[in-house]
Structure formats: structure tokens, C-alpha cells
Length: 392
Image (tube, rainbow, N blue to C red; front, side, top):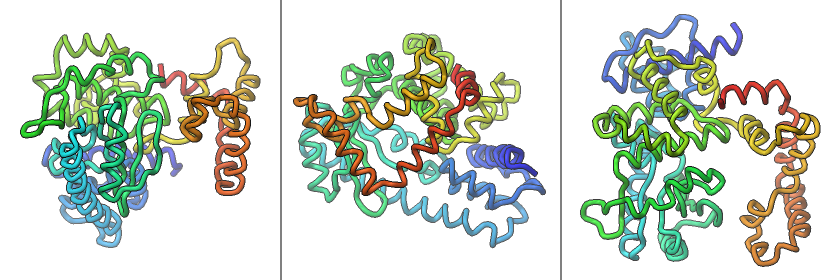
């Protein structure tokens, strides 16, 4: 059996497991030709191995205990991680409140509470929107809580605390490069309301949150790709708030943001996967693409999508690929300003900074050189054309 067929069988069964958990049902039996180790690897790549364990545990008879160990370990780790994240984020939100800093938790920290159990919806990092004028005070607050600064500048600042806490404090909901969506959400602070019992913690309306959920998914799809969990988030949120977010107003807002076609596709796929609506018309190539991804897609997809965005139609593929390789070696100023903030005031030092970046890579990150060379080699005309079709 080839890997593509293995992935199709594992993907279909993984989705049936997750759907059974969402509907509180017993999942179908494990297909005879399905290797549970392969299923575990696929589930892990999509960050749903812990949730899949809940489904497998409902089978009668139970799967071989030895083959269940990896899933059970994922469930234990998921429970511990969710508990730690919940406690830490509550402390962060309280500290931001005490320091009069406007904030709003986003994405996974909100949507996990709409799953049967919050630990079923794991988070690699926790996103919190902060008033951009208060980022310095937010930074001081995070340091006082024992976090280290991993990265500052650009769309968000990143903080870390051992063993599992990764916090992203966002200046904006959507990066500026996605100008249409960035503009739509630029005034979000004017549309939010205070969270009950707080003075500085805010929350979006159900409609705005849903549009943001779809916009964030589109951002990943446009980058490295998106996975099963994101499609499941769409179904879980729509199922919970169906009355509020199904209607002409939401459709009009999707049209306004350019998300209409994408939202329709993802909603249809979520209904087919998690509500057994087999009459939904979906693009099977898009579904296969998402199954082949991980939670946030892959570096290979990201390179192809970036190449498509940055390439002019009039350029031949060979010329475009050469220019693209040079841009990877010598990044543009916005990226370099994140690494070297002083470039904002002294842009004439770009050549020096390129040289410093190159030396750092050679000394400390040689594997990155091999990785980038591999990605450039992977970039072929046929793969670019296939991706264009999927994106359309």
C-alpha cells in the first residue's frame, strides 16, 4: 500500500473519530488495513491525537493496549498542558487588568470552551490582543510574571516560560500584508465589549469572532496551509452559535473582506467531515491538501505560496525562481527591521545587517541553510501550478 492511500484511509478514520467525540457517539470500528501507529502520526501532525484517544477509548473491544499507549500519553499530556495554560493565562489577564492594559484573549483560548472538554482543543501558543500603545507596559508585565522575551516587533511579541507556555501579544488581529483583512479589523477596539466583571478585558461579538476565526484560517491557508483542527474549529463554533452567525449579514461581511468563497468552502468541508453532510459539494483536492498538511501546514507549502504571491505573471519560471532565492538570502527591509530594529532609523546599514545575518546563520544555524536549499529545490513549476489551482 502506498503512503497516499494510507493517508487517505487514516485521514477518513481520524475524522470519523473526531466527529464521534463531538457528537458523543461510538466511532466506527478501526479499518483492518489501518496501522494505528500511522494514525497516531497523522493525528499528532494535526494536533488532535489527544482528542482521537477519547474516540478510540469508546470502542468495544478496545484496541491493543500497546498500540494505544501513544494516544493515551497524548491525552495525559493534553490534560496537563490545558490545565497549566488555563492557570497561566488567567494570571496574565489579571496582571494586565491590574496594570490598566486593554487586552482580549483570542482563538484557541476562547474556542476550547465550546468543545466537549477544553483539553480536546490544544494550543501551541496563546494569543492575546493588546492595545498597541500599551505594548511596552505589557512587556514589563510579562517579565514580572517570569516570562522571557523571545521576539518583539512586527505583528506580535512572543514570550515564553518553561515548560509549555508560549504567549503571543498581538498589536493587530491580522498582519498588514493582508491589507483588506487588516483594514477590516483595524477598528476592532471600537466594536468590542467588556468581558463581564472586568474593566480592561474585552471580547468580540459572536459575528466578529467568527469572521476573525475564518480570516485567521485564511492567513494560514495562504501561508504554509491549514489542517484538520482549523476545519473542526469552524464546525464547533458554527454549531455553538449557529443562530447568531448564519444569515445575510455574515455573508455580506465575508463579501466585504474577500472571504466569501473561502468561508463557503471551509463551512462545506466542516459539515461533510463533522456533521456527516455528504451532500455538501466540496473540492476533493482541497480536502486532500488539508489532510496532507499539519496543524499549520508545512514549510514547503509556505515557500510555494510565498513564491506565488511575490512572482510577477510576466516573469518566466526560471527567472522568477532565481529572484525568489535572492530574496530568501537577502530579506526585505520590514523583515530585517524585526531582527535589527535600528534599521528603521538607519536603513543605509542594510548591507551590514545582511552580512551579520549571514554569519549568524553559518555559525549557529547551518541546518537552516540546508533546509532553505531543499525548499528551493522543491519549488517546481508543476507544484506551483497545482498550488495555484488549490488556492483559487
